[in-house]
Amino acid sequence: MARARRRTHTAARFDPALGDRALATARQDLVVGRWQGARDLLRDTGRDWDRRTHRIRLLADTASRIRTVEAWQGAEPDNPDALALRAETEVMRIFAIVSESHRSNGAPPPAVDCLDRPQLDRVARICLQAADMNPADPVPWVSLMTLARLYGQGHPHVWHWWRELQARDPYSREGHHQVLRHLSARWHGSHGEMYNFARDSAAFAPLGSPLAALTQAARAEHYRQRVETEGPGAVGLTYHWTHEVAVQALHTTLRQWIGHRAGIEYAQDVADLNLLVHGLVFAGMLDEAGQVFSQLGDRPTRVPWSYSGDPEQLFDHWRGQLLG
Image 1: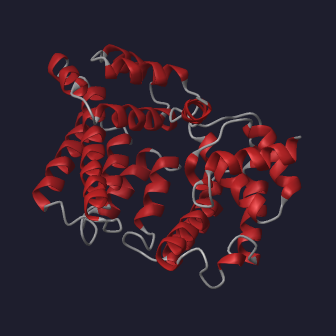
Image 2: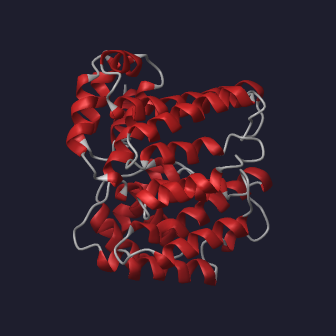
């Protein structure tokens, strides 16, 4: 019984909606075949591109396993929100094929051999149709940037898609994180390219923007990739978080983002605060970590804590130690 209670507690704490209760309700509606909740949520979100992007991606995560978004499209074929959600849903579905292939074959991702070019091109066309139906909307371009990773050598138009996204939402949190993944050694770049993009993006972001935490996302991805490819005892891994460059980046993020948050919470701040506080505790910057924990509260995310051990135990240990 104790073990069952532990699993329930853990599942409840790792909230994919990141505290967005309206989004959580709309996701539940999709599961039971009711698309009206998603329609109303996206209508009410309006041109808040940051929250719209987060909400569509989380709705698509749910919709990818069912057929409710197709029912919405059938009922309202001229609704651009329905098509934007369908586009992101198709992206999620094609990533699910890759994940299933990875689980079945044991090949390290990205295992894209299970896909053929026509599959990817079909999804890209749906994304472009969504972009045409609502030209101001950045979300279909985020979907395209996500999809581009699955092309064997990267899509030839990927950087055109990136420019289109920037023209609509220049400081798109999700868009920048998708480019970061695209440029990682895991996909189509290298550690150096990934770090350069993260530093440049953070440097040009407005004060108070969570894009400052891109440098912590890059360092966490680098750590994850090294552990996966070299093992937890890899040479130099002990200093990964305490390296002078890593510590300097943490100070910069604190100064540019935390120092100017002023109570503003973006849609994915919970995820970015976890990235930052994880880097701070492993760098030994415990006073600063305590200050970030006081803003984050009891809102853990699996990434990046899972890269370093049991995510719930690590989060609880450090939060308890620093906040008492």
